[in-house]
Length: 362
Image (tube, rainbow, N blue to C red; front, side, top):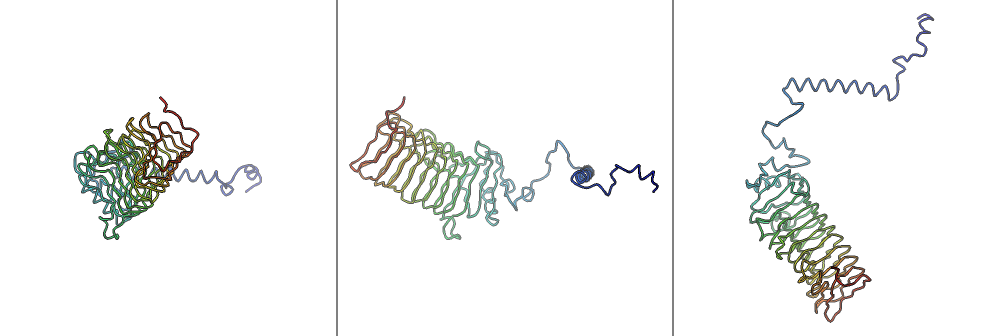
């Protein structure tokens, strides 16, 4: 190369001198463009769809990713139209997931069932979230069941389940609870909505431990029957609950430790919270009110002892009692809470330490 040519190259960038992120980005863009062209050509050649696509094939198990991470109930024949009985299809999906320790998914729809959905250990149930997206609609049946009696091959215990993001509408099964838990441990109920529950109540938990309920709403029929959540001899934590429209909102029996943090328990005709032969339970930072002047916000009954209510709003709506402790109960404490209404107590006395007490507000 002569000197004249060399001078012409001064200040220029030769290919071997291209380095750094700019050059690499340029090459990546070329490669991506080539991939797009190749994909487009392949799709056209195979009769594929690039826009305004519509599925015209037949849904199979593999199509709906039943292997991992989700088992879709539609893959087993569930229609979700609110008319066809989907019980067998959904139970088949649950049984399939049992072998995978998997997640059974409910898409948008209303899934009619005529017997409880029985969930084995290590199986999770997920929907789209509350708001009537993924709806389970029982007819003359409970909705979901986790009971040791149904799990003999697991030594009679249910364990490690999560139920999340579904709505259970109980208008066609007023005599039954939406969810039944018995002889089980390490369970989570999250982002659930139980609607139109009747005499059978919303959620019943008995003989269970390490159970957590978070952002669960339970609504009754507003006719003064049933219990929103009934907990017997169980260790349960409840976070940000909403329980309305029953005879009793939250019914607690036993001394295993039920702990409520935040939430609303209102519009219940009898007791918003009823401790019956219950000890060592706590309510913190909750809004609790009766549903009528006949009701009571919190009752300590039947030899209930050592229960604590703290930092909560308690309103009896001008009725007979906001707080009631019967003759057999003792050593219960209400501290630093806004008490609106009367306090009735037996001979043992109810310890009320609060600077916020006063007459009912209009």
